[in-house]
Amino acid sequence: MIPVNEPLLGRQESEYLLECMRTGWISSAGRFIDEFEQKWASYCGRKYGIAVSNGTAALQVAADCLGLEPGDEVILPSFTIISCALAVINRGCVPVLVDSDPQTWCMDVTQIEQKITPRTRAIMPVHIYGHPVDMDPLLCTARKHGLAIIEDAAEVHGAEYLSGRNTSDPTWRRCGSFGTLSCFSFYANKLITTGEGGMVLTDDEALAEKARSDRNLAFQSRRRFYHEDLGFNFRLTNLQAALGLAQLERIDQIVAQKRWMGSEYTQRLRDIRGLQLPTEEIWARNVYWMYGVVLSEDTHMDALQFASRLRELGVETRPFFLGMHEQPVFHKRGLFLNERYPTAERLARQGLYLPSGLALTPEQLSRVCEAVKEVLA
Ligand SMILES: Cc1ncc(COP(=O)(O)O)c(C=O)c1O
Image 1 (spheres, rainbow, N blue to C red):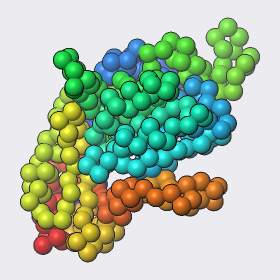
Image 2 (image 1 turned 180 degrees about the vertical axis):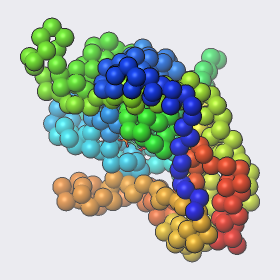
Image 3 (image 1 turned 135 degrees about the horizontal axis):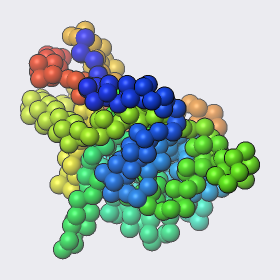
Image 4 (image 1 turned 180 degrees about the horizontal axis):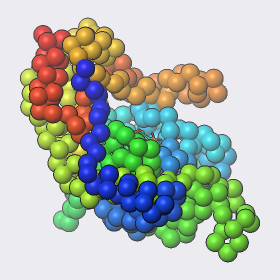
């Protein structure tokens, strides 16, 4: 079976891990934490990085830092992981959904404006499967209405967006550089992985301070067991940061490998009828975190049937997200009842992603493409 993801860990990771063991810095202090935070922030063009225990925690910290109050509304895509909605709901706030763009599968930024009400406090753009959200119009709307941005860049390490494409001075900016607070996950299937892990980035010193306090039980530096705030234990360990730092040192190679995989899949699959492939808009550099494909309805097959046929041929896949508005857990709470997001629904029904890990070999990639062709022949 060709696995949907297999991480690629190297010698440097082992050396750094051994250093943690030799020196005894195995918990949430140590040189790798500081270096990983600084270097990741700087790679993404930000001032401050606060490492946390996972991407879900990063989103929660971001929502907490903004001081969102019960009843406040946050606009986010339906087509995403539940972590995004949880960060909003856990604060008693209201997630307000928009549909996805049919090409990029990211939130359709043209739908944001009509969802803004006097209670809207923030927008949460989520870059999907390696492709950036169209950030310029989103930033413009946020500025116009004074809204904060919680950017979810969990799936786009190293991806870039061409900012100001209609101006005389367009510039490529890394995803993770746009949010009031920007969040990452370093789960094992991400481009950079710490096993479990996450990070919050910001340029605002006060928000950084709050995020640091939040992740560490709101301990104070002046008097340790004295608390003025409620916090979380969302600490990352030096062991985990050691893994992340080792990979960050070769991130250009990792991004190049993913882009190679993306273009190779696209070249081999582009002539197959009934299969929509990932796009790369002219204003985007996709890192193909996961190589997704969407079956058209006229194949008379849905993603579940497609996945089981591929499995018979030794290819493991994963279904796309099921939109937030289709989740029973939210219906039970009276949320999103009777809301429809046709693109998110089609993606959930017809989309899956193919093996996309860094350890995927050219031979395996060829076998995956042959299997896809065989099933759709
Ligand atoms: C877009 C997005 N946000 C948040 C998360 C949550 O990250 P974690 O699994 O590290 O909690 C993920 C996880 O894959 C994700 O894809």
